[in-house]
Length: 185
Image (cartoon, rainbow, N blue to C red):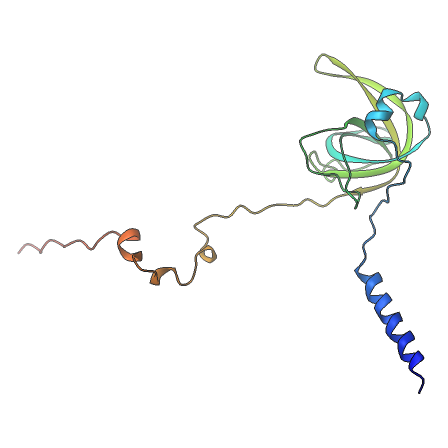
């Protein structure tokens, strides 16, 4: 039998495995994606431009025909997930058509949206008048809640199994034996 067939089969199998290992972001970031701070400087110039932005949900307001989500903008990583950082790119309003449950779109969750810039809205943050870019959302990805476990030294699996047999273990971790008083007759 010809060895070229085995080479083609081997190469096809290797490419199939490589394709299975690759990951595609839920919302790809286009090369001409304008950053949020640039758009905030001149919102009318970016009217109807497609954007992919993300960040942390600050507030959710359900209205008659849409749901408005206030987002604290964060930079996106290569997988289009908002990066956890103390720095912000600014805030924006994401308008979703129809109802989005505020219990699911909870404050503090990460969200990535794709949509077009629909204009601006000025609102107060304290005494400051803040100009929000408004985005009509066409696609979104709500990132799952991740929890980090804080380890407690009282967890039974935390200890080394050989720990009790270390030299010097007994006098340091258990009180010395007490001589019990003799019972009175």
